[in-house]
Length: 202
Image (tube, rainbow, N blue to C red; front, side):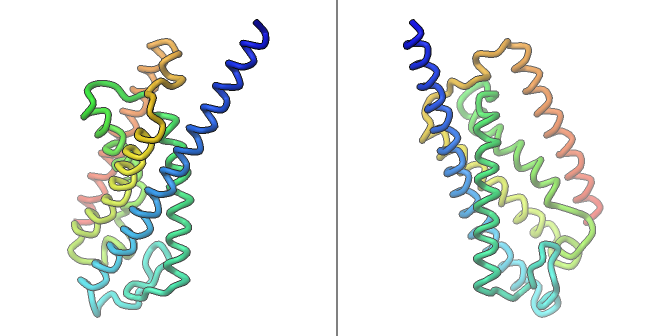
C-alpha cells in the first residue's frame, strides 16, 4: 500500500514537472515569435510610417526608432523569450479555470491576457503613443503582441499537455469560481484602464 502511494505521488510529481516544462517551452516559443519577431516587425512598420520625423528618437522601451542593430535584435529576442516562458507558467497555472464551450475556452484566456498585459504596455505619455502616427495603429500593433503570444501558448500548450484535468478540478467548486471571479474583475479593470488610456492618447 505504501509503495503504491509513493509510486502514485512520484507519478503526479513527474507529470507536474512535465507540464511546467511544456508550458515554459510553449511560452518561450510564443514570446519569441510574437514579442521578438512580431514586435520587431511592428516596430519596423511604425518606424517607416513615421520617417523621417521619428527616426533617431529613443522609444519608451529603450530602442532607437528606425535603427535596427544585431545586438538590439538579439536582446529583444532573448527578453521576449524569457518573458514568454514566464507567461507560459502563468498560463498553465490558470488553464484549469477555463469553462464553457470549446470556443470560449480557447478565446477567454487570450482575450483576458490581451486586456491585462495591454493595459500595462499602453500608456498615454511618452513617445510610443504620442509621437508615432496614427496612434490607433500603434495601440493596435502593441495589443497584437500579447494576443498572438497567448493564442500561440494556448494552442501549443493544450496540444502538448493534452489532459484538461488540473489541480483546480480537485478543489471545491466555490474556490474555483472565486478564482474565476477574481480574474474576471482583473480583466474588467484592465479594460477600463485601457479604454481610458486610449481616450487620453486620442
